[in-house]
Amino acid sequence: MQNDTSGRQTEVLNVHDCWKYLRSASVGRVAVSTASGPEIFPVNYVPDYGTVVFRTGPGTKLDAVLGGATIVLEADGLNAYGTIAWSVIVKGTAEVVDSAQDVQEAADAGLSPWEPGSKDNLVRVTPSEVSGRRFVINPPSRWWPPLDSQGT
Image (cartoon, rainbow, N blue to C red; front, side, top):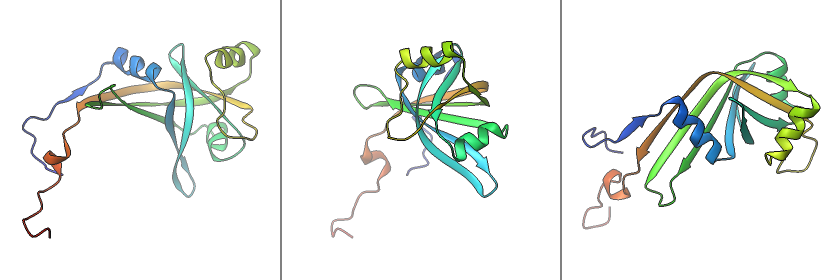
């Protein structure tokens, strides 16, 4: 990759834009710290009244939530033409919620597990920080070095 910063078109997103992009996607990654180091898991999620909710079953994610660990959720996306990308990060605390209203709202929003198995725990991440950026995707000719005429 070129380290040329001229022409760089990266924009730091305001909080409003971060939430707009979070609402436009449904897949992200949740990162948690464990005794053996960081772990990252794909999740489907929905934004919900200034928080983010996802479902999970027993295991590392749930253990981190129950242990009070900080949760980080990252979601990324592209515009329809594949020319502009965005990335949003939500850092915060998480809790298992089990009120009938919360579960119903998550179901109404389309939150359902993709893979088989028990995903009976609805987790709500309350952000302490929301940040993001948007940038123009350079064509590969800008970041791959050209091959010489002999193809080496």
